Structures are given as structure tokens and as C-alpha cells.
Length: 476
Image (cartoon, rainbow, N blue to C red; front, side):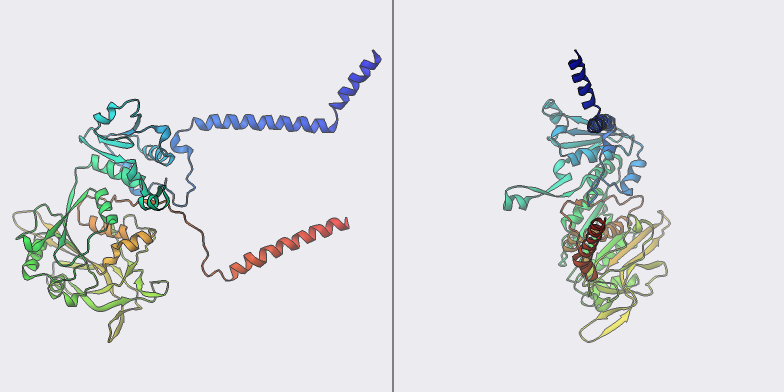
């Protein structure tokens, strides 16, 4: 009996050692941490999906611009978004963005419909799987958005590697365009002039116009005796051949009745397009000889690649934050006295004072205009007064796809679309570009002393610190 008591005493002492006390403490803390994690997961699981995901991507695909926020804030009518897809099988980027976007307005209702369980829904909404059906009962308008337009894939990657990859995310652009379409009855028609060697608008620009509910159509002025009545804007992009006298008369008459014309100049200078130059001169816009070089505001010591000084206000300034626009091989413009006192001419893009107009024979220093707007109020007794508007941009490279795609952080397309939208009363530029999904690497150009610090400085500090710690311990 005494031996049994002695064994029990020894057993108790075994569980009261410092080691077992520390072990019990560790087990208790582990259980507590696990319990806290479980509770946190349960709490987080109750948070709406729109607020659960934090965007840590370099391209910030879940960030929503002020343009879209203002659109959603001003909604008066209810919007239905029916997502015809299997939610659990949908890319997380799409599900997350839809929830974040819808959370910005109580007017938007999102409903997920599984087309596998409810195949009749595809027939009811006349669409296919993996599509968002957006509608507004108040206006009776509807449209659809395919997931392929939100997550844009690179078809060439499948050809080369056998697997497709996504290059851009256009959630905000597609949803805002759809919401704007179903709630607005405003649609604008843009005619693009042909027959003078003009450039074709890039897919980047046509996509942005589509997002803003602008429709485009080609127009050969030689085949018409008047500008179509439904023309809201006449756009001429980089003509290389001059206008005829009849075409000049058409454009003059159109502007004289309150029309809107926008002209982007190409490599051909106005000195080679005398009839077009004469029309622009009437509105106080003349061309400078040669190409413009600006050593003070240029891209990586290339003086013909210019970052203009922007002088934007009103609608032209919407969404502009970085003030960075790139033009290459630009012709120069100067403003002069227009033919009529009723015409007002002002520049919205200029060079610095250190720019030069360069020809083979000469270089003339000065400040040159790169974007000019001329307006005139047209009054008549029988109708309300109208405002004609002539916008001239000295370089078609503003919307060159090689620039807009290679330098997506620049605001070339924003400035261009603002200039287009400024021709229309009561219209806001809602053409939001897709965000790139390509990998961005952090690099340091011209590292110099920084590279010396990384290669030699930091290792030296670590070695010295390690030696000091070793020496102190050795003496102790």
C-alpha cells in the first residue's frame, strides 16, 4: 500500500515539473489560438463578399474609378444584373469584382442563375452561358456582357504554348458601359472621314467609343453633297492628301451651322495641304514648318518624343490625374486672329518655351501649340443659338496603338476621349480602359550607388554585426 502511494506521489511529481508546466502552457495556448482562428473565420465568413477581398495586385483590378462611382451615385432607376454562370466555377476575379461594383449602389441587384440547373434561362434572356444580362425596367433597355470581354485572353499564347493566358481585366469598363447604356437614351454618331489617306482608328479607340455608346461610320465627302443630319461629330484622322474645293465648302457650311469637327494631323504638314490649312486659318489655327522638338519635355533624351504641357479645364480635364501624354513626330500649331470676331481660339496642349520647329534648313525656338480648340456661337432668328467646335490635334500619334498599348499608364486615350466628349452637351466620358494583367517587374535603372549599397554595403553591415555579437559572447 505504501509502495502504491509512493508510485502515485512520484507520478504526480512528474506532472508538476517545470517541463510539464511549460508543455501544458504551450498546449493551452495552441488550443486558444486555434479557437480564435476558428471564430475569426466564422466572423469573416459573415462579411459580405464585396468587403472580404483586399486588392494587393500591382494593377489594382478591383479599384473603381471616380467616374464609375459618380455614375452609380447618380442612378435613379433600378438595374438588374443576372449572371448566367455557375458561381463556384467562375473566375474569382469576376465574382469579386461584380460584388464590389454592385455594393456601390443600392439600385443594383445581382442574381446568379445556374444555367446547368436552369437551362431555360439562356432562352429567356436570349444569351449564352458565362454572360451577364444587364437590364433596366424603367427604360426597357438591356444588354449583355460576356466573361470573355471582362477577362481578355491572349489567343496567340495558345498557339505558341498550348495554353491560353489572360492579358487584361475590363470589369469596370464593361459594367459601367452597360449601366450607362441601359439607363441613358443618349447616343452619338461619329462619322470618320475617308478618301484622303486617313488612318483607321485602332481597336483600342473604337472599343472606348463603344463603351461610351458612340457609334462610328465612315464617310467619303466626295460622295455626298451634304453632311448627314445625324452626324454629331466629324472626325478626320491623319489625312495625307488635301481636300477639294467642294469638300472645303461642305465643312465650312457644316461648321457654320453649329457642326463639330475634329482633325488629327499626320506626318503630312499643313504646307502640303493648302485647302485644309485655309479652312483652319479661318478659325485662327496655322501650322508651323517642320517637326517639333522639345529637349525640356521629352522621353529619355529623344526630343521628338514630347510630353506636352496640358491646359485642360471643364469636361476636358475629367479623369486626368498624371498630366502625362506622349506625342511623337508632332507638327506644330500657332494661334492667330480668326476670320471672324465671333470665333474664340485656345490651346489645350503646348510645348515648353524651349521647343524648336525643325526643318532641314532652320530651327526656330518658341512655344508651339499641339492641341487647339476653336468655338463660335451661331445665332439665327428662327432657331436657338448653336456652338460650332473645331478641335485640331497636331499629332495622330496621340491615339497610335503602339503608344497607347506600350504606355498604358499615360493618359493619351483619356485626353482624346475627353476631347471627343466635349463636343456633346450633357455627356460624360465613361470610356474606361481595361487594366493589364501582365506581370510587372520592379527594376532600378541607372542604379549607381544603390547597387553598391545592395552588393557590398548590406552584406558588410551583417558581417560586422555578426562579429560584434560573437565577440561579446566569447568574452562573456
